[in-house]
Length: 228
Image (cartoon, rainbow, N blue to C red):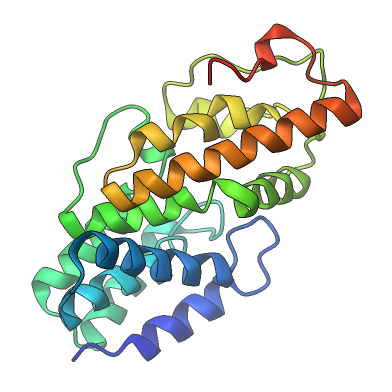
């Protein structure tokens, strides 16, 4: 049986205190939502499958260059951790492939086909960018990067084709709804993920309608919500 306690402790030590929305509690929710989505679609799962989903969810940001200084070096640590925690070679390979290829930015230039289990982890991570928690995280990340909340003179970018361009984008936080977040539901893999994604997208649109009513900063047609 794989030892998830070691995985939990490693993720906690790596992500604790993060103020950009990639904290340990985010990782924990990704693990929980991944399992919940799988169970909703399949009603039962093996202990080994659950361990893979939970490990990938807990570890997915521990190698991310938004969080750690040396992603490749961290990946070596994660591989050793998984081996030391009793995961089979196939499970180790599945977790490593998932955490390296699930992110939105990793799939801009090309689309990676994840395993069946990896797709649930990816959906869980993307669900975390939607709904109330998605709103909170986008403004937390923007604040951590020194970005303004909104600026009516800066319109959303219509298309971002690669990771380098994505990371260089310093547009106001509210633009991120249009540049990325509203596109996520159609990119989800699983039936359970898609259902949750559409519900959370609707909530975010209601939030922006209220934001516009209170601030008047989204009057430009580029911020219209009818076509997103």
